[in-house]
Image (cartoon, rainbow, N blue to C red; front, side, top):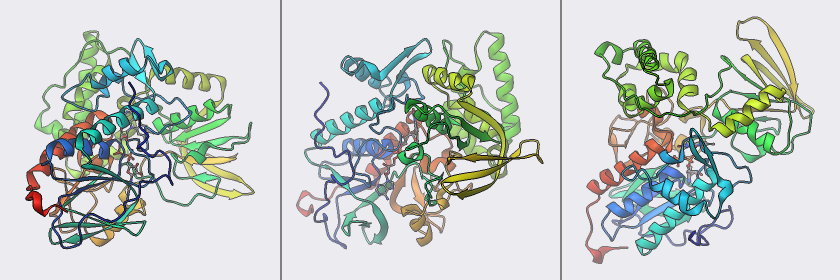
Length: 486
Ligand SMILES: Cc1cc2nc3c(=O)[nH]c(=O)nc-3n(C[C@H](O)[C@H](O)[C@H](O)COP(=O)(O)OP(=O)(O)OC[C@H]3O[C@@H](n4cnc5c(N)ncnc54)[C@H](O)[C@@H]3O)c2cc1C
């Protein structure tokens, strides 16, 4: 039975109010506060509930009021598919078949939420959101009230002698012994004038389009495909232009019937992005000689990617980001076959037109944008007049966000990783402050730490970090006597 999820507010303004805060400043608190209730925060709450002593309270704080959804798994009318097979989307690394079994049970009631292909089964993202919510719901029941949901935005943190005071947008404070930052993907906060959108995930980015008038998407990765399929699903038939310097688009999933585990890399390869990539190409050729496709080689790298990334000197990581990242991304983050079919048909019909080049200038007037593109070979300029420009160029880095993370950076409680992609953490996921030392009892996981681990954007990696959070937080939280509980 699908659990009854009435306790879960799914819209802003149906918030569970925090009420009076637990504990007062200066008092010891048994609470751990998790900021953000997407996949990372939800799984951290589940792991902490299981790992911490029974008198610890876990606050799961979410600014949208939508718990266990995050950016990726919101309830939506568009049946966007996961880009990872159901077989690899279990929330628990120690139980890889967990999601698959849930899907088999629940899909009887919701058959439209699955696509079975020869490359594997793919569920919709909204269905995955229901899975996550069901997990959180079960955990809340098991917790006897120890997991508490708070619909609020954390806008600042004050350090206390024994923990943290979280300052919320509602004016409430929450006192906790430790804080887990799970604020996830950092959308751009650049202002939107109704024509140019810097946040591709805001629903208004593809709303209210005029039929027949062109749209330009800057970026040609998975987010672009999502936007294009979203527009297609709404009946918009283009033309949609999509531009990027190399014009590369995500590959599709296919059958991977034999694995190709990564072989050992030499010290020279471990210190050079170019040597690493050459070696991967050699492995692709070796695999092909045995009838194994490149997808198995790329998938085989997953368990060692974070270690390889951390071992590369900074200038080599920067080289990778400048030159190789687009090639890596299109091979590594692939499309479900049925989504790829629709996308290919859009290209074939001319509804979607790919361009190679870069945006030189964007001018808006009278509800339209004139966008000057420079060809990838340089020199040649072309101006497109479009009704909308949507930037889908990936995350802009921690500095571009004006919210909590930017404030924490300003106060020196956190610092960016060396590439500026997110926040610096230790291997044990402790947040590193501006002095270069771990801030006391403050951890982070998920896309916000991608600069340190690189491979921590998707479920198969974040679920391992959540498991680790359970262990490292429990090590530092000494149970207080039951009598001193708030
Ligand atoms: C469109 C899209 C599709 C994806 N598809 C897949 C897929 O198919 N398979 C896969 O494995 N991965 C996918 N991913 C990767 C995805 O990033 C991860 O799977 C995962 O969902 C990241 O979760 P998160 O909780 O870290 O971040 P988010 O989902 O971004 O959640 C962070 C949450 O924190 C909240 N928050 C932020 N700041 C505050 C604050 N100050 N106070 C309170 N709340 C706050 C936000 O409102 C948000 O709900 C996709 C990502 C996107 C964007």
